[in-house]
Length: 420
Image (cartoon, rainbow, N blue to C red; front, side, top):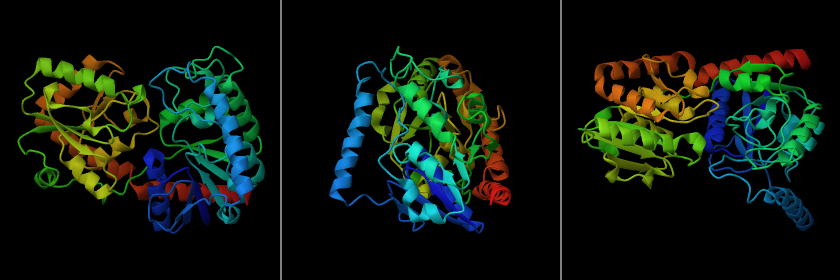
């Protein structure tokens, strides 16, 4: 059985998840490869799609890109700030022509923005296509997270993320192009969370497709609980602090960074924070300062998974303030390292946090409630430590890479038995 994963890149949330799945499938005997536009890893089974060497083709692609970009530029001054990515369904790449696509038994799509041209790709592929949802983009008119908008349940248009009031705007045109493209393919949808599956089932574009639930998995031998003292020594974090950890990858409203800052402001007014430290990893790790009332330990961007496990192991508590996540890998990573999590009761993350068992859930966007949940965890050391033990056990039971790979292998085989 030959499986080809198609993902725009091998880094970022989706890229990391697909890279892990690719290796997981290989470990259970599946011939698995990954095709990307942007490759950063040294893994041999990850192949970068070749750029066109023809001068004529490169010039043609530049013109096509300018046409696509010109449609986006129409909303340059109307689009609200703090929004997530908004992407088109068109691309300059003819992915269907690649030899790996032609030889694969199963085509497995993931996060494909800027890589796959929907009309061209689905028209040419006459074999089973599995598509794992890493955000809502496959069933919207361009947005990757919809917030409070539910227009994808009927027909996109007058898009709030474009600041548009026109029914026939870019989101409507993208929506209709996707609708037409999907008529041509044997598509099977996989959702990593029940929340994402529910959204897809309500959408006009995907409601008629079979939607399978397969959670994202981790290599728990790497994401394991390390010795806390050794971890703190390694990362220069004091031993005598209660450490609260969080990631700061993107400063969009959806990631909830501002809600966390507001919660921290409330916490320092209610309790003594002199023995509490904030450890932060990610590109924006230096965006906090000690004058907030907490000692701050910026850890920077960490790409090495083993080092990241030591990062989690320095902490007593992980905060996940996202308003929407298809799944929430950092939450899973923290739990696998034996760290309890506090987050908002929203998106796929809420499905992993079992209140008073593996962490606590706060009312979405309620900074006072988030602050109270964090304070409770700070004050209840024994309960917090037991939650960390429970979190690790939950990951071992439900979220290992082997469990995920075995579920996909069964799905692949059932589809091949039916359609090949």
